[in-house]
Image (cartoon, rainbow, N blue to C red; front, side):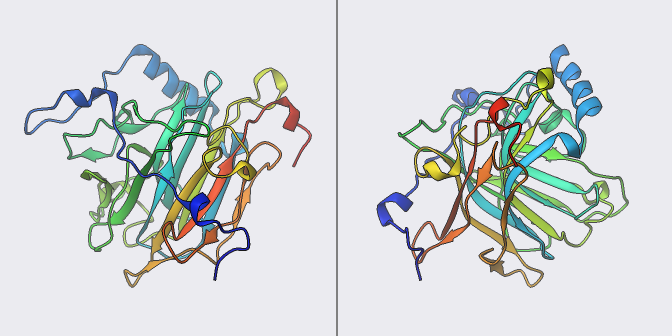
Length: 300
């Protein structure tokens, strides 16, 4: 069964390999690439710690509330405008509902924040990826599209693979069941089980989509963009998309999240389409994003 607006040509998306600017060089065996920490990075972390809270976050996502061992997806990549001190992500979350244990992987445009190896906990094992490095290949409006395949999974499961941004809000514990992060180039590393208080054996939520930190500059809604900076209705090659979203249930079987909803916290600023399922690649897809701005102050 296909959606009424299905068009095989319009559903085709590119998944060309993502390149980073530094990759003309390579690290010796036994070492990994690390971005040099600057004074501005420390100030950004302080700003994030002082300002980040649920009230300032706006999102447009596909939500799965189910016991799981991880998830995966292809995430469309864009270079967008972000206000100073704010951030905009397109990513996948795996975590525990209403608890601090959370893993987030994807891409980020930011002018502030603590992410990647600047935050403690993640153990990188891959020398070919610079976690937090600049992505050289980004999508062009009405032109070439690029996406990254991302996966997060438990070490004791057969499921697999995730990406370049790693952001975690975790609590200390003595367990040792790792959550692994992989990319198309192979495993990138893992979060040790000792970091997690509530995710020793499984998680109970997976989310895919966009998220913006809105600091309400000058008393108005931020102009920080989400996705491509365009609303979901613009569709292929214009709005950002995520496709082939899957999660792994407790029997280690991949599940299409067809029955689960998409939701936006403020659809007049950033919105999300319903998940469309088709019988050929990509097997599911949804669009999300928006421009933000003062014109959406009064909207829902």
